[in-house]
Length: 83
Image 1 (tube, rainbow, N blue to C red):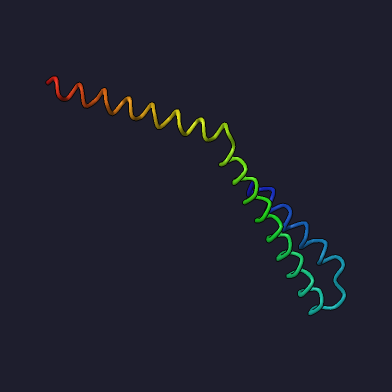
Image 2 (tube, rainbow, N blue to C red; image 1 turned 180 degrees about the vertical axis):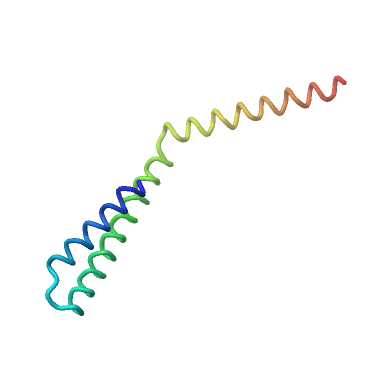
């Protein structure tokens, strides 16, 4: 995912550079484009991670791991008490 972000930022920089006529205006445009891209990317990434985190599959998996770990703890406690 970092590779895609790096490529996208480089493409934005290249586009801004090739279209550049005024130094200050180009810098401002580039800064605005990169800022907007970063905000949009961050919002989409956060939304996607929240959707995955709150999905039924993720909740079921967390529940299963919790119960499996509890069972292992119980087994280890039984083994230690029998010694």
